[in-house]
Length: 270
Image (cartoon, rainbow, N blue to C red; front, side, top):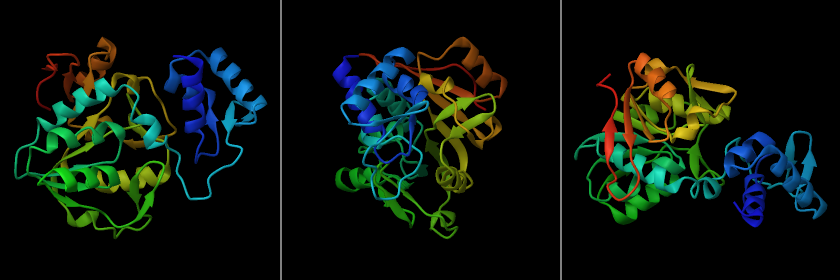
């Protein structure tokens, strides 16, 4: 990745967040820790950010409320081919007339394109997913009550009565910050609270996670592996991670990018 592109990603990632860590930036850019530290030092000298211990912070933080999650605009261009393949495989699980839940995220957002040919009842806390489906499909779209968090383009409410408990779905589709032996991980308590409410409203939990999520970690556990029915990922998944899912009796679908856009089941139904 070119230096100017790394700098754009670094500056975008600190918007609306107290601090972005060196480790986060390594994951986002694929650059080495030493390269990221040099980039932070250069941007600090240019007064475009403020260097802090272990990372960087914005010199002019936003005034609106935000959460500990990467901006939607930054994430949506990362590993886009993999996200599109994963999303197509997710929509293949749906049948017309079903009720589904789609959690906000850049991978789940890619479901909107194949969903334009379907007719389902869709409950989502994602503002861009709802907007796209309303404009370009005949799906019924329902939203929870709450505030729109601009950076992540999601609707969250601190209250129990946000409307989600009145919707029942056959499946919930969601992304995650990380996926490991302990289960799904997220980075903000508000996200965990909202996602746990939605998980309880669906029979099956389908996780859309590109293969890098298996090495990503966060401080908050959302749910155990035992709650997950299906994981859809890309062909970069390691045999070790596939074995972990198999041991947990989780159905694994590997979505393949490229001209054929094939998918492969690597485990039986959970």
